[in-house]
Amino acid sequence: MRQYMILIYDREAEYDAVTPEGWASLRDAHEAFQKTVADLGGTIRHGLPLDPTTTARSVRGNSVTDGPFVESKEALGGYYVVEARDLEHALEIARVCPAPFGGVEVRPVTDMSADPGQ
Image (cartoon, rainbow, N blue to C red; front, side, top):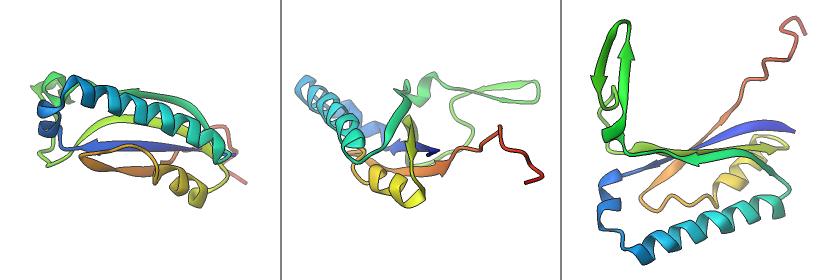
């Protein structure tokens, strides 16, 4: 099985209006997603939410600036690293990943243990 990263991108401002019940519902949705991954034959290796971009710092050479380097409508809000049979299987898993104010990106994780000559 190969590892894939599911990057969750959302419009951060939408979270300002989420009620405590909404946060509980979102937590429940992620717990259900974790169960669904196993039901689909995948494995979650790691996953965490990220603090808002207001807490981010960007480093370019010796310069440090506040916030993300790139302006965008959606920001990286969290991620999962999953094991899946192939890209199609990873996409099947990603389709059920909660991202109520945006979407997800799926990217293969580079296998650094592989012999580059093969």
